Image 1 (cartoon, rainbow, N blue to C red):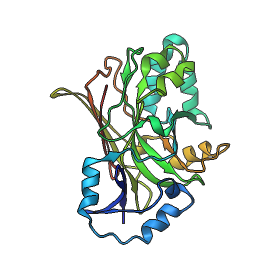
Image 2: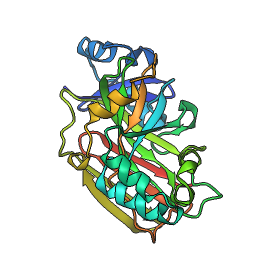
Image 3: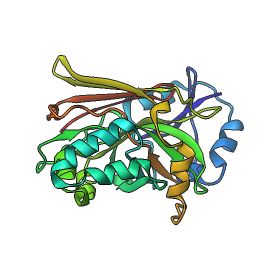
Image 4: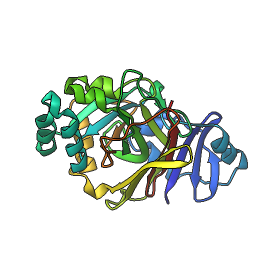
Length: 277
């Protein structure tokens, strides 16, 4: 059966259907080999109201010592957006070429301490004039590079900085509060369906100022391909997360503002909601 694993202020909680229970395990240990799957298979789940309350009142981002990496230009819509924002800097060809290349774009996104969870605020840079969330499926990868679970990712991005020069990508992507993960780690009985829908809503006050959707089937590359490239020359003893790129890109006339409420929903995985500060 499918399981949801929450990290809370009072411990790790496992949920299956409507049953919640504390799980006395080490978070990082779940990312080693097949420990997560073996542990869940052996787990007897009896509902504990205190565990459910811990999820409601003390939820944290589902991460321990894992690094977060990200993929770029994996959807055609992202290719077009990157080309448009960087055309004045002469960088459009870079994005067109990487979309068609054998090697994907992969970049370091965040250490665990900079990751914000469900209900926690994400940030836009003070030196940026054009900012968007990027809703993405995030893969939980074991120390062997195997996909052991999924969560919802928010790859906050400064389009003005990246568009000014592609070499500014690290500054556009990596800063305090630029990474969202949550609300939980989802372990499915079988790989996530290619037709799974990803949706984004951005609310400003009482109004929805942007909404969009895509499906995983719109990705040019497979999830296993992206994970395989990440692990080619890197080791992750505690596993890692890999965001798989966005297929929802607001137009050039939209930018986030402080107070905006971002909701990202991925079918069969969950909904991550965060406010911009």
